[in-house]
Image (cartoon, rainbow over all chains, first blue to last red; front, top):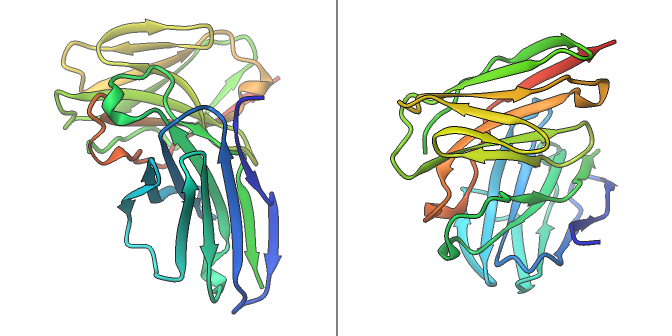
Length: 117
Length: 113
């Protein structure tokens, strides 16, 4: 199935730990993103990568480090986890912006619910 | 990027037509209007996108007046499965400056039997 898939779906961990969330898309898209959705349901962009190059970093703490080994993968590594990092993290992808108007928008993964205890 | 305002919540009954209006007074010339749907425990899903007048697909219709300062998402004959949060977004989808979507608080639609 063509999709954006992220793993794990659920992640429960203790404060201070380091964890990673993986994301893969097989849609052939050039741009990938990480979004964070907090308990109030607001979706905020964290990072954007275009062809493995970082193009957006929305004042996210240095503890968050995205890694894009190729344009089909964008992983998120989080160091020294804090209680406030608890949220649902969504990976997304889209067509290259320079290709012009796309009528299909962005495709999101199903999310990773991170709980820090 | 233009800010959007939409109702926080709406209630409807099965079989009714639902119209959700979004205000975007400072929309720019290159901005497109896009609507997403999010079910609980899922990521947002693209519904429809338009620039002006009316756009229709198999899921919904999007009405955009000439001044483009607002838009209305129309869901025909809703069912219980249409219960979700609906987000209105406005942004430059052609040149995609910055390449990011700005989500507002969305409209929580509750469809009752």
